[in-house]
Image (cartoon, rainbow, N blue to C red; front, side, top):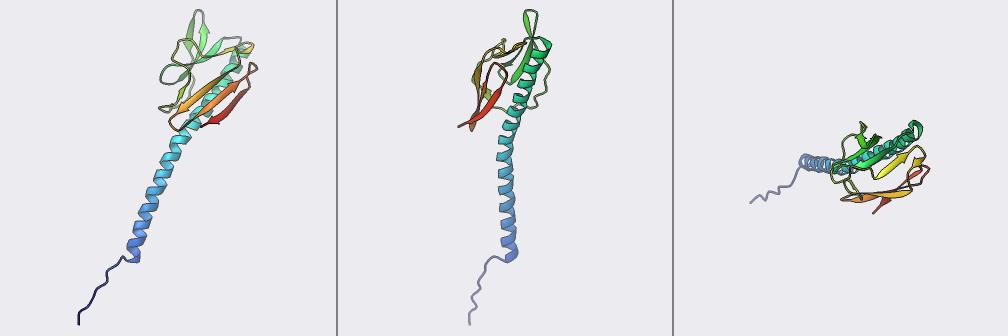
Length: 147
């Protein structure tokens, strides 16, 4: 009489495979979420610092602004005939996150003792989406998501 052996996976083997799959899935979700979170956090910090710099310009009677240096945004203060970079901690700037305005020595957003120099809009873009900043002369900044 011939024995026919049926070989299958044991319960332990199936549990190990499921545990590995769950671990890989959770790591992938965490990685994707951390990329999005770093962009959100960077823009939240920048928006808060932008409003603070506008308030500082108003209270200190200075011209201040925000410009793009090609790698990251930077805040500047008018010192005589030149713009002086202000030391403002924005943290790590995510690669690929850029505004819709070019590199310039002059700031694209200008804050004066009377408020923001003019109403306007800035669009921040990255591979998966964008964010739109609209502000009025009084310094009200509205942030909205873009597709």
